[in-house]
Image 1 (cartoon, rainbow, N blue to C red):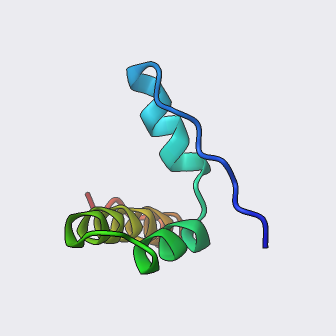
Image 2 (image 1 turned 135 degrees about the horizontal axis):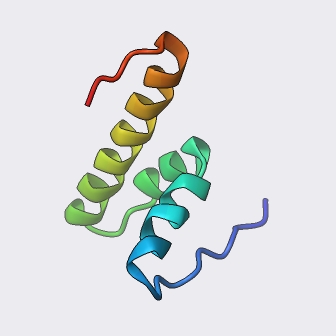
Length: 64
């Protein structure tokens, strides 16, 4: 399986675009392969946020 290259953040808006373009599967993969505890915590939080945003789309109610 080929890894996607994640672009470097160049402008503040780039971070949001990078997050929205990253799949749930990719975040899960990064969580499982995190090198440090802090990195795993970071990806767990991003994954939780991604799942919460998807949940909002499904139920049609703002949770945040």
